[in-house]
Length: 589
Image 1 (cartoon, rainbow, N blue to C red):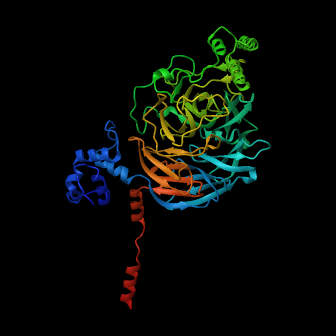
Image 2: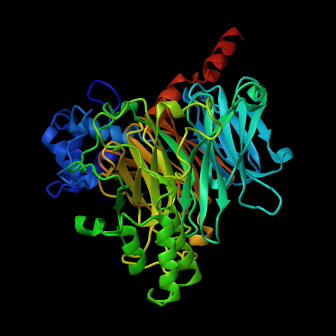
Image 3: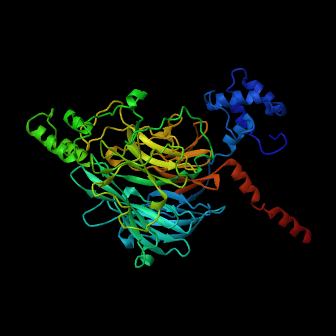
C-alpha cells in the first residue's frame, strides 16, 4: 500500500497492528486499510499503536531523530536486519568471532578450525583470504580487530605451549599482502588484546604470587616488532595490577573519550552520578537496591584486618607484623582458612605499595585526548564480576621511553584502578557504542545476597542474560537491563558471547541458538535470528547498520539484511529477459 512516496507497511502487518487497539475489531480493519490516506496522517492513532504494539512505557519519548510516529513504525519494521540473505560455510568448525573493518569493505572471522578468514563485503559476500595459524602452534583463533586505518589486523588465539593451557598469542597481519608482521605472547588467552592506536596494541601477562594471588601486567607493543626492534623500543609496560582471590584481568578494550560530548544517540538518564572526591577507587554494585547498600562492601575484611586498614599511621610492615601476632595469639576470629589468610596478607602487603589512582574521571576538565582502558576483573572469585577502568594519558600511548614505563617510586609496586563497576554476576560479553560513550555488558546474575566463602567456588549463575548499559561519561548505569537471550553453561564452562552496537541497535548472540536485536532508544527486543547451535558473535557493518552478521557453533556465518535493503538489492538485479528473447526469435522465424 502506498500513500505517495516510499514503500509503506504491508496490509498484513497493518492488520496485525490494528488488532492491538481495543476499539478496532477484525471487520473494521479492512475499512481502515481502505482509508489509508487518512490513517497515515493520524499522528495520535500511530502513537497509540506504537505504545501498545511494542509495549513501550509511555514515559519513553519518541526517538529524537523521528519526525512522526508513523516513521518510527516504518523504521522498526523496515530497517531491522532480520532477513537472511546468505550463509557462509567455508569454516569447518565452530565460528567464534566476527569483526568489520572501519570502512565496512572487509570483515574477519575466527574459528575453532584455527583459521582467520578475510571476507569481501559486497552484495554477495565472498572469501578473499584465509590464514591457517596451526603452523605457529596455535590451537584456535578466537578474536580479531582491524586498526583505525584498516591496514593491519590483530588476531588473537590460544597458544599450545608447554605445560600451560592458559597462554594465548596475538598475531598482526598486513592487509596489503596478508603477511604476518609480528607475534606477541598474551596470558591469559582471554585478555584477547586490542589496538590502542594505528601501530600499537595492548597485550597481557600474568604472574603468580600465591595460590590465589597474582598480578596482571598490561603491555604496549609496537605492531612492527620484527622490523624496528633493533633501533627503538617496541614494548613498554603500561600497568601492573594486583589480583586477589584467583581473579585476573581479561577482555581488554579501549574507549576514546573525544566524542563523549557529541554522541550519536543520547540516551535518557536519571540524575548524574556525583563524582567522588576521595582518592580511593569508587565501586558501584548492581546487586544492591539502594544507595545506602551501594556504599557498603558486600564482604568486609576480618575486624583485626579492617582496623589495620583504617589506621593511616601504621606502615605495611608494622601491619603485617601485628596481623601475624594477632593470629598467633588467637585474636583473629573466626580462624581463617589458608585461602583467607593469603588474601588478607596480600591486601596488607599492597596497601602502601600501590600508586594512587589518577584524577577523578568525572571531572569536567578531563583531557579529551585521553582514552580509557576497560577490562573485566574481580575481587571475590575467579569468575569475572567487575569492570575495571584505567585512564591512559597521551604520553603513555607510545612505546618510546623507558621499557618499564614512566618513572615511579620504588615502593609504588602496583597501579590502582581509577574506577570499578561491580556487576554482581558473571560477565560474558562487552561492547562499545560507535561513539564510545556507552558500554554494553552481557552478564549472568548471581543470587541476591549470596556470600562467597571460597574463591574457587563462585555462586551459581542465572540462565537469563542481562544486557547492562553504562554511560562512560558519568560512570552510571542507564536504562533497565535488556533481556531476552539465555545461556546454560555453568561457571566453570562459561564462555564469551560477543555483542555489537550500532547507532540505533544493539545485538548479541546467545546459547539458545538465536541472535537478538534490540532498539537502543526504546529498550525493546525487535528480532530473533535463528541458527542451529550457539550464536557466539554478531557484528553490524559500521557504515550500514541494516547489515548484520552472526557466527555460530553450527560452523556458519549468516548474513542478515533489512527488508528495505533486500528490496533495494532486488531492484538492482537485472530482470529476466527470456520472454523477450523468445518473442524476438519467433518474429525472425
